[in-house]
Length: 93
Image (cartoon, rainbow, N blue to C red):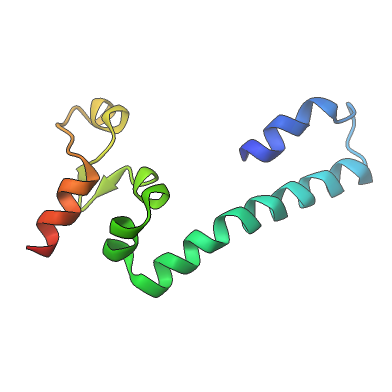
């Protein structure tokens, strides 16, 4: 469940109703509207250029070419991690 719906779930009635279904549709649309600009940038520029140009996209990268770029992911996989900026820069050299 996405964070938009999770935050609104506490106001839902116990049994499902038409009103609760509308709420879920609206929160899904809100999530789609917020993420679409990032998807468009990834599609137009490609992954490497989008990561280099946009800090928000770079923060969302957890692995890059099989290398963990986030410490929690690396800890889970019991591997060393490397910053995404270093990996993207080495890709261009």
